[in-house]
Length: 387
Image 1 (cartoon, one colour):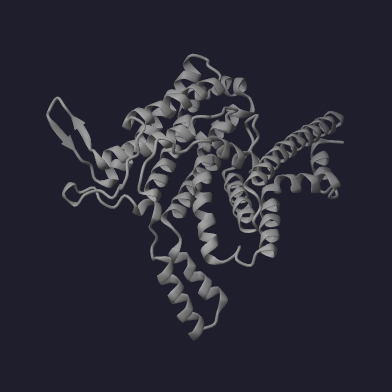
Image 2: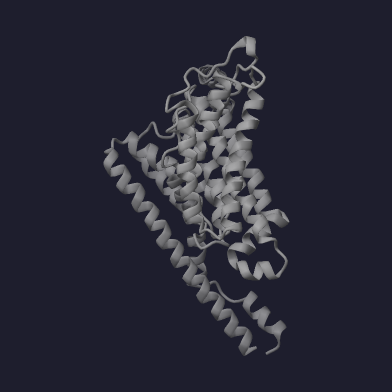
């Protein structure tokens, strides 16, 4: 049989059980989300109300933004355990700049920045911490687990040193310094929920259309959620449509082969850790803005949540396989699961057990998918050899 005939027969072959299994495995995060939402919607009538959805979305945004940065790292077969501490350091930097300004003792002045400059400086520091991670890993051949574990302690220590372990409260700024408006980042929306609810009531009376009234809910979506979607869209485009994204996948798939094909592996790795640090700093800013306060313990254990949503979203811990979209769905699974368990009154102790079990199950399914793909690849090689 010639090669063209082989490809034609494979193209027209019947749908098999293995194909169905592959599709189900790849869509596991989406299926899990549907199941979680369906179960808790049945158990609690308040689960799918607009107000509860917005509450869940706020928490999802935190894990999703962290997960986006973590996805790039894990796609290169790395890991970043420092994201929670970098988020805490970012919160403390922003809090210090707003409440105390930048003290320049050599000139005897204190410089206060507007909110946009505070955000820019904080994000730059986050990217810098990520760059240090990447340089330690690539230049000194330190395993990512060890390098980022060290950065976890370093960033947390710097956050504590920033204020001697104290909290920066009341981050509203002062009019005379031109640094007001920081709380809007974490709590703002196009319109307050109360206003939107009032509008929905009036529209429902005049035009009882479900989709129209629910559509008004978008006006109350917090800026935090819009930031998450913006990060997700940009990251998905970069990962899927740019040479950088293809190089990230190539490194995770086979680092040696990628290097031999001309990919600048070290530079790409430094950049992905910078992306992770940037995303972590964004999370620190959002949390400090939402609480209108910065505490050095901000972000504790966030790295575990980030890894969880990435794994649930189908990204392989071995690198080279995964999507940003899957990570976002994974974040919604964790968010919906946690919110649902709280609403139905499940004990906080059992919540930890259930969440941990879901994560372990996700890793097991990922390993099953990897073995199935290896088996399919081997069968394809055998068919080509026979042709």
